[in-house]
Image 1 (cartoon, rainbow, N blue to C red):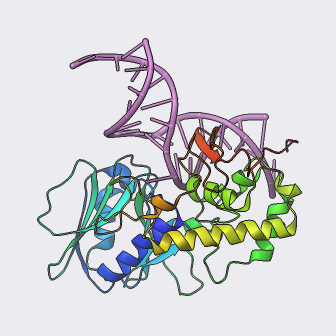
Image 2 (cartoon, rainbow, N blue to C red; image 1 turned 60 degrees about the vertical axis):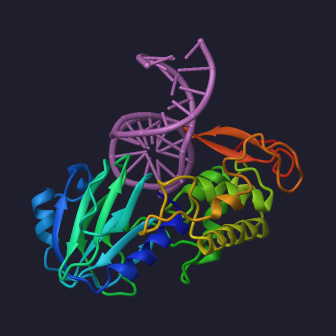
Length: 286
DNA sequence: ACATCCACCTGCTCGC
DNA sequence: TGCGAGCAGGTGGATG
């Protein structure tokens, strides 16, 4: 799905519904879902059977479940992945990719993913709290992480030679931010995403991180952002933050601050939304 | 090392 | 009704 608030909603759901349970069997319905696991479906199923889930952790948009044998089950939802808690008798939907069943009955955990950009895989684990799965070494901390170092982020940001929206989407600089929350944060601080990172003052950069953090906290409190059934919590329920969006998806609608029609610009095979008046385009390029 | 771009997918909506 | 184009919340790896 999803950006940090949506992934965090899923993590919390896993903590509630899956932690403490023993995996009894695993069924891979689509091999692409585990393409990041070298062993293939048979070994994947064997790697998980009989293990108990110890916790539910997250770094940026990646999730992982430490297991009783010391390994971790990793998940990334890609653009359309869902982790759903479902009664065992639930019929297979068209995009069901992996099913995990648990000992002693109770609901299954299902990985459903229309576009198949997401996936599950298993890696060696390690000791919390500093442990980070090997595959996630390049992912920065997110701005809600207590160990996120704002001053380090700001100095790295200002040393970049790129545009601020690109930098916000760079998960090696700051994680958890995607197209929605980047646009929302930029709108809040009145900066156009095309501004040069190197020309931001420290104060502006600080304001920007503050806005990212703020919009994510607000979204989290409302269960995340969803426009349709594609982005849901583990119980299949949508969050309400789409009602609070001020920028994303609002092309031609009035800016909620000044009333000017919002503009939509093409950006990396996607769209950026901004207010032409509150967020003027920079005069100079990078 | 750093910056940029696009392939990887399915499905929906829109205009012709 | 059909069909192609364009679009969708992400990312790793190739390329410069």
